[in-house]
Length: 434
Image (cartoon, rainbow, N blue to C red; front, side, top):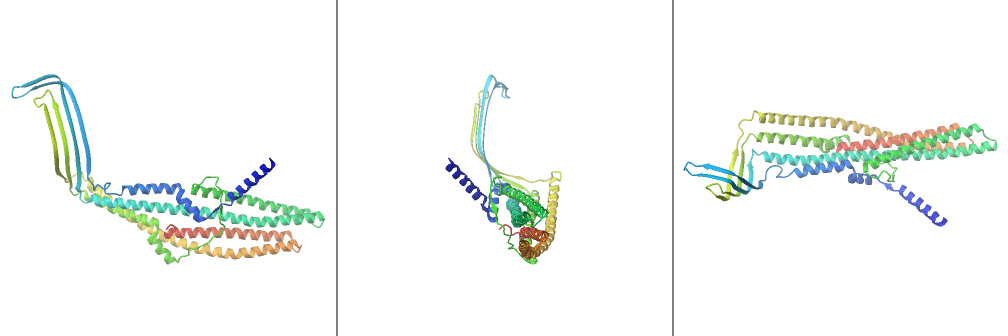
């Protein structure tokens, strides 16, 4: 039993270690978001609805064919007096009427409204594609933000681990000195207090990382208990010139393209209403059967079978000026769409400039802090060695440790901010999703 229990505990520990060490790369996180994220799936279904509507039938370009049938039976008293002097007077007279037909109605001309509608439906389908892309871009930006939020906390935990190791060594040295009578209890208490402060900060940082992991799991629609680790490196790969960024944003920004689609839809809406001033021509055809039986009539049976076909034309003359009002409102919708496009274009140029300037600042800050952390590590190593050989005080080592911790916090924050600034640039330029 002891052997079985030991094997079980070893297996459980091994399984937990494997689960804890499951590496989630950023590319894999984005892939999972594209597969599972609920907002993306909803936007995808909405896009499919718009695509389903983009066809000739919905636009009214195809004929309508109906199969109709009717049957009616009447029982009642009948009394008739004809001009010929004859008459019918019958109780419980029975009348049977049966009819069936296949009818076709085809609008062959409606002022070209159906063609404008067909193009409008195609634009709405394309707008659905654009809306889906915007949702994907926003979700990917959220995933990147959440992912590198975890990376930031992990880097801070690594820094705290280094500081705690130094603090533990200081406690051991001061404990040994106090035991040997070469040091004071006050130094030992100060070292212990500093160690506890570092451990407290470690617990707080670990909690922040756990919260960040929950946020990422939610974006990826993963189970709340899914365990994973992340890569702890931050690499900046996108660094366009301002001119290139402005050019890309003007051609590829998804929100701007969505407003451009809205302009085209509004233009086609005007054409739809203007077409309603023109006549509508329908072709009609039917193959029909009709049978009527009446035992209280001189005509006991009436039956017909054959084709009917023709053409109808309708020209609107006056409808209380409602159509003119609709045309005016459609033109105003077009004007609003044009103004919204111009507004978005103007705002985009400002956003691109601000984002580019922010990115340059964040890159410079990250480069500066990368240099600072190297100095801070060396300062801490020297101070630690000096304290170990008794050449410096506890205060000097603590200052060096605090300098290293502050430098690491600034560096982790600078890396995180730079990555977010890069992500925003790519989103504005329309290159976050290919």
